[in-house]
Amino acid sequence: MDLRIPVDEQDRTRIVPETIRRADRSPHNRYGNRPTMKDVAARAGVGLKTVSRVVNGEPGVTPETERRVQEAIEALGFRRNDSARVLRKGRTASIGLVLEDLADPFYGPLSRAVEEVARAHGALLINGSSAEDPDREQELALALCARRVDGLVVIPAGDDHRYLEPEIRAGVATVFVDRPAGRIDADVVLSDNYGGARDGVAHLIAHGHRRIGFIGDMPRIHTAAERLRGYRAAMEDAGIPVADSWMSLGVTTPERVRSAAEEMLCGPEPVTAIFTGNNRVTVTVIRVLAEQSRQVALVGFDDLELADLLQPGVTVVAQDAAALGRTAAERLFRQLDGTLVTPERIELPTRLITRGSGELPPAD
Image (cartoon, rainbow, N blue to C red; front, side, top):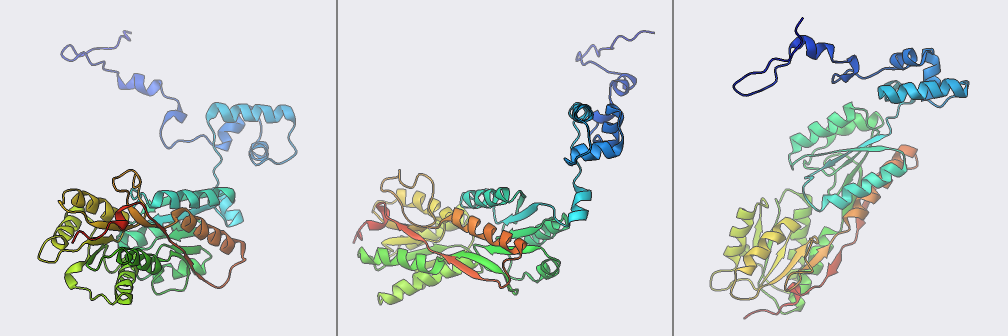
């Protein structure tokens, strides 16, 4: 029989007969067909109970037998299936994290802090992004619960979290971070959004500004609403009436933010300073201000990478994202340990970092 591999003469592609492809495969090379404890037992020449004892670190196995089992495990690439252990112990040693946007730099240190706390407790972190969509948030949170995570850390996109009540009653520890839960009583860890914005705007006022614009996120978002409230409070404290044209809330797309900034900067009485409601807004406003012929002061909520390298450096109200994540995760594991009963609201302070842009005097 001729076993030479035929070749298509036009494109020289090697054509491998299906019979040869099938014969060359071992059962364990196919996706989804993982080696089992039965396979390990057969290769090592021992019983299933012996393999189970080795895998679970139980006594009663001779060193020589353990060596054969370990060699079989390594050769087959066997990994323990924890499903049965989950059913016995009622814990998966995993927690879920629902973020707004995995691509947002603010959530990097927050996620890392949650992961570090989880790792210290021997737990795996599984995270996903809601994309600021309440339906997607609910779908993701319930999908994590269906996979039997022990707890959830949620940055909420929606304002009604009653869908989690059955999961919480069933024992899923839950902590909200950055924004409070809606219509349920739950632990929440926040930054002082109101106080931070108030301090940032007061800083601009102290440097002589009276016409100060505010560009923020969607008004339904808790952080955006609190930062707007802080802006209004600082202006009121200084006895400065606020014109409607000085305030703009909406999606943080560059197009929307650019349009809002340009409108504030034109007209007979343009703003002399802008307070931005988050890091994405700040980046776009920096680009707009770079195109202006006159200097405009800027203070942004949230720090951002390279802010100190710009000329002038960007003055910001900084949150401690890592502290938010760490505090939320620690609360979660205290719930799991049974040491927390009453939900609490924890508010972490912000910090004003002066770098130059917020200290510019009014141009007129």
